[in-house]
Image (cartoon, rainbow over all chains, first blue to last red; front, side, top):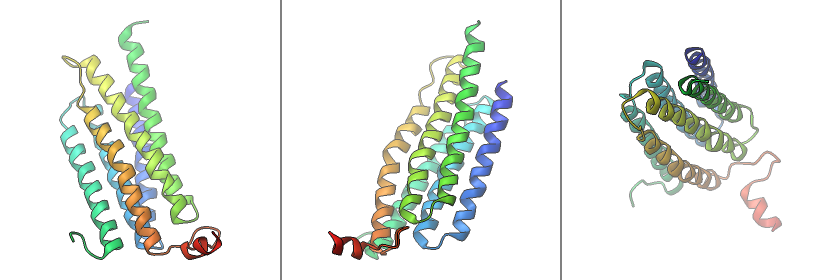
Length: 89
Length: 114
């Protein structure tokens, strides 16, 4: 039961990663691409947590936390650069 | 009903709901007409999807593992704190770049009508 549910969730997450990648490639403005990249980071961290749940280990939380932090910092830095023209003033 | 079987059903439901919420967020990112509406999907639905899968993972590890497993909530808390900040900064960047809304208005038109 649980393995079937995890497979279904993997399929849904893979589809959402593909849709997000479509927005990264197609986005009309650079802000759309940054937003899609942020979503891609969050979805990848979710998928990593799901993979750890599938294997039954708690070994992947640190990696997921690291990916989430990198995504947040990337988004903040890129938006700040677009708004102010500089990252650290 | 055995508590382990009940837990497994709850975890399975949470996992599928998390995948569905993530898919809804990405679908909103693709299908919405302009940037400011596109900002809604990832900032709400994807956050709930990740929180749901993390809650499922915490429940599963608490039932199966040696003790209570709480470090999933660290990621949850981090995501819940950082996603509004990132969305706010992205919205500010989009306003700075004067992106048009779906009805054709820009930020300058909005200020003129006010």
